[in-house]
Length: 225
Image (cartoon, rainbow, N blue to C red; front, top):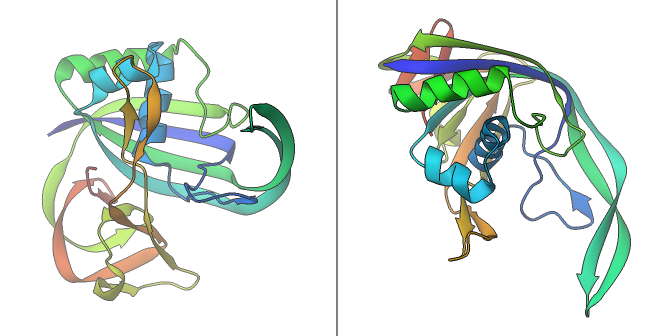
């Protein structure tokens, strides 16, 4: 099956966890909503237009590099009893990250995305407006579905903690809910996100105790979400 392979790097990235308050934790992988939003910036679309256009797009993700995590102070403005109040929160972020995304959709959509990512309408970010993408490369590739026994630094559906065996030190499994779709009212205004599904985020190499059918390209094995 044809896919658009997107390699991208950023010096910093932050994907705010939905339950963050005084500490704004970050996901290790960008939620699908973040990736769709970035693609919308490349296209120059409003967010609701982006979801109308890319609502059927499937995305596979592989984390190629991560320098680590850090924290800084972040000033926010919040509305309380009809007044704007400033507050300082602790924000967690990633640094020196490289991801590979595999995008699957119709040929027309993939060609439009390929052109737009090379010459984006708006700056591309991985999270906040200052988490700029500093390197990006696109390539049309063929991906194949086959039984896979070994996976590395990717994201899979469900809670797979009991189905994985680490193959290297310092591996980590994170099971969490991630936003999968933005929700809008009748006027096209964003009113929230859908985040009811569990995902297993992997850092490092693992053996699947029972081989699973995954998509493969080169040394990458991933699920299309």
